[in-house]
Length: 204
Image 1 (cartoon, rainbow, N blue to C red):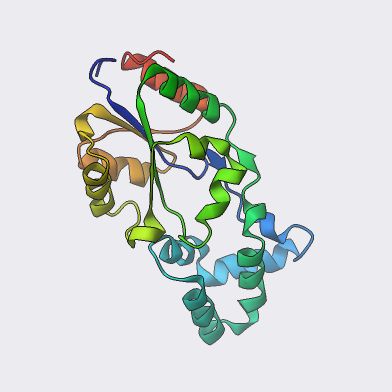
Image 2 (tube, one colour):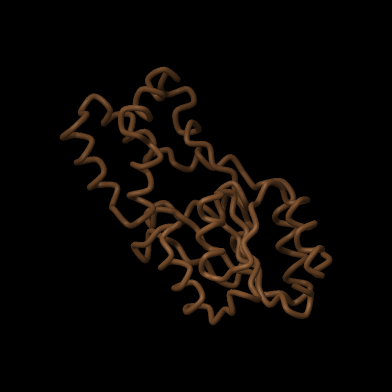
């Protein structure tokens, strides 16, 4: 790709624009061993993905209450103190977004995030508010790496996948985006993302 062919850059949010630490809500509130037991027993990555895909937290609580009632207090702490799971911006990412906007490149977001907690994203990382738009998985009921969400992204924002760079910290999400024709790049740091864009002729 060249600078002339790159029309848009799509950012994942968690650990790309905004840091996410699921242990944050428990600091000073629950011993680490208890948190680890909760995460292990519910299979937290899979459990959390259900909320990202649209399941309400109230339904998640009912599920935990039915199967693992001893962990309901831990779940409640996570939801009530979710803001503490977002310790701030990913270093350098806001500057990258600002530079892309200044260059006239369209900048968008695609995130796996519960619709009920997404409002915490922008206060934790102001770069989120600079994006032209964000497709939130929990709002549409489809989560990465489901191929349908990439198709919806392209449709909703009138994107040409071949002329869109997609940045995500999940290899599975990057692979799925590439499968739908996006120029998908694994995000590691903002500096590395700049280098990837420079290699495509977008020097910011």
